[in-house]
Image 1 (cartoon, rainbow, N blue to C red):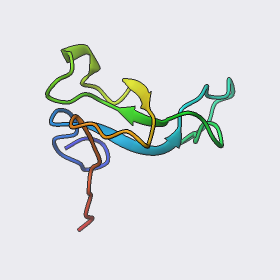
Image 2: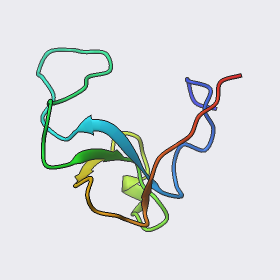
Image 3: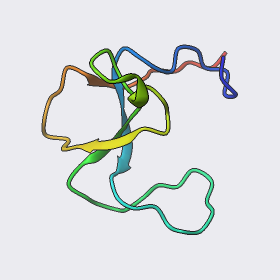
Length: 80
């Protein structure tokens, strides 16, 4: 597991995030949320169609929420 106790964080599909895509602040922040509104939502990591370089949590891109993609999904997490 990673530091949060989650397994298998990379692969399968890119992860759809709640944040709108935009530049982060230059100041140090914990769990930054980005901008209030933008053209697309953040997607992170990589999936089965991504390069190996994209299969990491620091890989950050965006997609318009109106579009459907077979390689972007979301992760359901249950705490025990």
